[in-house]
Image (cartoon, rainbow, N blue to C red):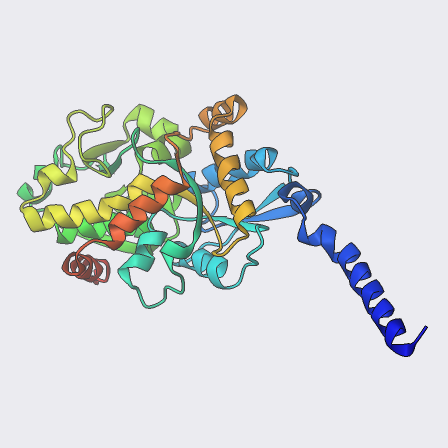
Length: 350
C-alpha cells in the first residue's frame, strides 16, 4: 500500500472512530441527558414564605414529569428582591437545563424598568410557567385589627400616619410605596425587613401598623391570623375587580384619584399576572427547554400535585410559558413616562 493510500485509510478510520464516539452524544435525547442527573432549583427568596413553600412544592414534583426523572435540589439565594437569583441564572448558571429558578413576581418587570443593577434581559430568559395568574387571589393592604382605621378613607381622615413594614424589594415594598406616593395615602413605609413573616412579627410587637401581602400567602403562612381576623384589609391590589373573598374592599384602581394614578397601578399590577414564576437561563437547547415547559404543564394538572398544593395552602391558577411571555411583552410596551414615574416612586426615600 502506498503512503498516500495508507494516510487516506488512517484518516477514514479516525473519522469513523470519532463518529462512533461523538455520535451518541450528539444525538443524546432529553431522557438520556437527564437520567441520573440533578437539577438545581434556585429560590430567589428567603425561607418560610409562600414563595419558598411554592418553590419547594414544585421542586418535589416537577422531576417526575421531566424525561429521565432528574432529582431537583432547591437552594435559597435571596437578595435584592430576586435580582441576585435572576442575575445568577442569566450570567453564571450553565445553559444546559441543569439549573432552573423560582423568582419573585416583580423580578422580570424590574429588568424591563431598566434598573442599574439588573444584569439580565427578561425577554430572553427561558420561562417555564407560573403557578398563579392571580385569578383567585388578591394583594391587600392590611392594618392590625387594633388600628383605628376601619376603611381605607380613614387613613387620611384620621390624619394618623400609618406605618407599613416592607422588605428591601419585591411586591411588598413596591406596592406599599405605590399606595403612599401614587394614591396619596398617609403612610410611612418602613423598609429593611427580610420577609413577610418578619413583618407580621413586627406588627404583633407594635413596631409597625400593617403591611401589604398576598391573601393566599397570609392564609398559607399564618392561617390563624386570617381566621381570627388579626389583620384588617383596607385596599386590594393585583386585581381589576374585587376578589370574591373581599367583596367590600375597594381595588386600588377604584381608589386611584386620577387617570395617571390608575396607569401606575395597572403597570405595578402586571407582575401579579405571573405570580410564582419559574424560569431557566437563556439559550437552553430547544428540546430541553420544551421538555421543562411541558413538564410544568403536566405537573400542575397532576392530582397528586394539586392535592399537595392544597395541603400546603398554595393557591393554583397556573399559566404556561407563552402566556407569561405575553405579559412581559405587555409590560415592555408600557409608555416610558409611566415607567419613569414608577421608578421614581420605587426609589422614594422614607
